[in-house]
Amino acid sequence: MRAKPRWAEFLLPLFAGVFQVMGTRGVQWWQVNDPGMLRVPLDPLGCALLLAGPLALIVRRRHPVLCLAVAAGSTVIFIGLGYSYGPVFLSPIVAFHTAVVSGHRRAAWSIWGLAYVFLVVYTSWLAPVRTAGWLHDLTVGALMGLVLVVAEFSRARRERQAERERVEEEELRRQASEERLTMAQELHDVLAHNISLIHVQASTALHLIDDHPEQARTALTTIKQASKDVLTEMRSVLNVLRDGAPRSPTAGLGRLDELIERSGLPVTKEIVGEAGPLPPGVDRAGYRIVQEALTNVTRHAPGASVTVVLGYGPRALTVQVTDSGGDAPGESLGSGNGVPGMRERASALGGTLTATHHGRGFRVEARLPIPEEPQ
Image (cartoon, rainbow, N blue to C red; front, top):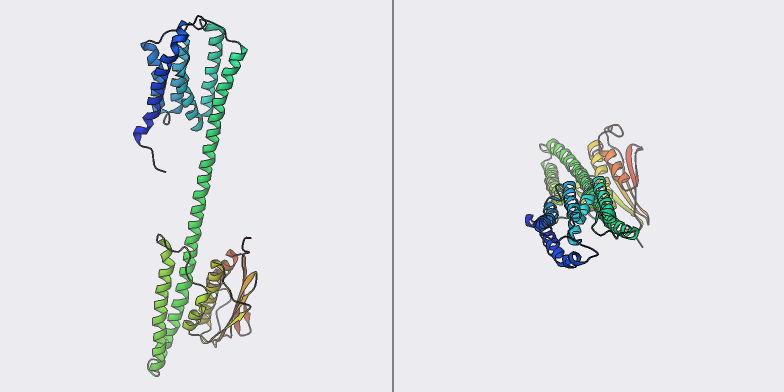
């Protein structure tokens, strides 16, 4: 929100000063000459008292209680000295409203109550012509009560607005935190998969380079493509930090064939049900679960055959990745962050994931709910 210019703080005090002085001059004639009023004509002291309240309004935001005390005190003295009733009440009304809205309710109510007591006592016993009765006191109390109600309503409204803004800021921070976590997960999956693939292919190339250079060339070509892919995917993930960039990474099951092709594994893909568009979160999670499962096969069972089954249902997407096992024994179940990371992705969508031995190999199976579209 743009801050008000400094000179704008003086507009209300200037208006109040001019209004109180000119307004009082306009209403005093009949009060001075009316035998039922007998008010005192305005003089320099009266003008000074009329200007004291507006001058105090200049500091109403920094010192609201002091401003109210000066505005109410000058008004009480002005009335007590017998000057005319009129716009002199504008300054204390503004000062009271500011004090209540800024949170100084107890002090504001106390000063407001004392001012009411003075007006009742003055008009009942001290005024030159004492014609006030209970109806006058009730009217004055109602008017001052109305000012109090308006001030309290403004305070409550401002507090609700501040609370709403605080909740919105917390929600923005929460969303930013979730996006950072998503980016961290994406970077982990991208780097883990591609670097594992590069490691395996580099080991293959080193093993074959002397006796089978053509096969080593194939491994080096795979390394080149994998390094290019990891740079591309990292750029896609990091683009979410730029203004105007898409808020979600672009990986999805539409790129599953590319993932299978560059994995270097004999993979069979099966589709169960009718494939269709998926919510971005489900689509991305399904892709990353397959990617992480293939990474684990590359690490722990190189050369194993893999079957990837995608089941498209009306309420859920099921992902099943099963490998046949490698010649060398794999690591113990649950080692590393791969399986916990997949479980976290599934749980974040309200789904489940199991990872168990399956014969000589391993099977990862996830169920990802598809949210119902609003009617």
